[in-house]
Image (cartoon, rainbow, N blue to C red; front, side, top):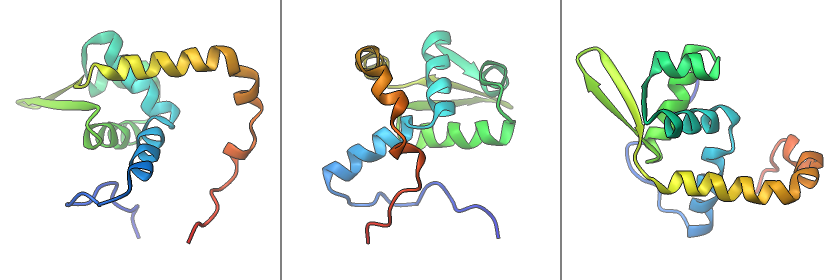
Length: 124
């Protein structure tokens, strides 16, 4: 049995707080965050260039790029066999800067939070 698909064909109608939580989960993975930051710094990049930047296995990078693309943060432009990725929403840079600003004054608290290391509770 393979891994579950990361996307569905149709959007899921969810309350706003659930959608906001998905935004945070999208950037809550260190590799996805590093990929987004790389694209912000480089302007655009191929998967090969991004592989060198994040030093993660190619299948994982592909999966993370798919997530970032599906969630509307980046776009993939194909020319022949080459796919180039770029950030599509300039607010992503501001969003990351705000998070860094928050972290600057709360790094000890965030660093010592062990609740984030636990499995999420089943909320059904």
